[in-house]
Amino acid sequence: MSTLNRRTVLGLTVAGLGSLLFARHAVAAQPAVDVARSPGCGCCGAWIGHMRAEGFTVRDRLTDDLAPLKSRLGVPADLQSCHTAMVDGYVIEGHVPAREVRRLLAERPSATGLAVPGMPMGSPGMETGGAADPYEVLLFGAERQSVFARY
Image (cartoon, rainbow, N blue to C red):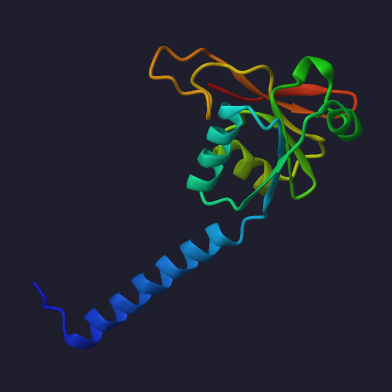
């Protein structure tokens, strides 16, 4: 069995630090998420906390009337939820997990964005400690929608 010399240990340490710095930079390089929400909605604030905990920078904009924004961004009425976000040209409607936002940004499908209709229990921002409801993350566009993920 061979022993590691000082140069080998130093090389491994530098390589490991480089990997950590690269991973940290990759998280920091994520585009900012711009969220529009009603001032009194606590679950929206909890979703923002989820996104921040997952490494996203979030800009929080309070508004009393989200309907014109949702309409302008092309969010169908049946997919609407309590808050609407934009990230790198995509619409994120409702309690979409950060993992699916990252996947959307990596895959870059031709779509308007992702939506979790309503406010399903157990989705990010809607954790209550009770039983979680099954829900779907939908990829939507002007003329189509499909299941992007199931939880």
